[in-house]
Image (cartoon, rainbow, N blue to C red; front, side, top):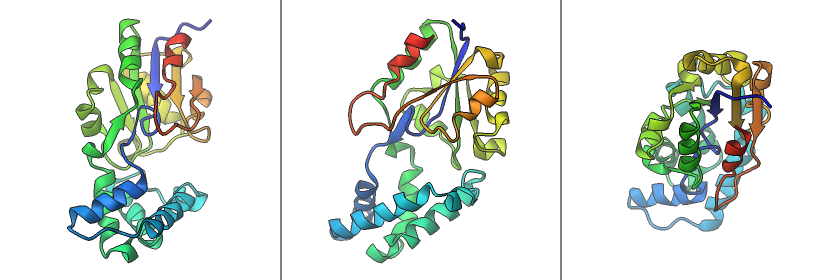
Length: 222
């Protein structure tokens, strides 16, 4: 069995996730502006249109994770096109502000125990994330930062996964060889790029609404 010396994690939907659904955030954004209750059916339909488009090849090709300005531009445009501003003028901007706020993110219940377990076993930990905004405030707030030794974010790195350089940069910063590194994520199209970099990859299924993420399996692998 390979002796791993480091574990890299994707961030969103692997270590952390938005603490509320899209519908919840839309209602919250409206309430924060003092607006009356939104129609639940219209909110649900608008958010479903966001979900239907957000992972398409067309949207992914817009470079939303390569700069903060581009990230805001692409996401607010998507929210507007999905009908968020028809629910309440300016709601797309408010929704975006909520999604990038550190207070809007939560850790899975097994995230911190897993990171602590890796530290106890002497492994190094890094994060490799496709993101157009800084995740550090959220990681700080959730108490995860002390267990993470390096963070490679696409908007700072100038490339998105599955580009090999995203993974090799993290390994180099940790001082660990790729073949001694395990990448943990949830997206086979992006996180599996670690294999091309000479690493091992462990892909998690879609997260459930409640309960642990399944990160405890990582400890059994190392």
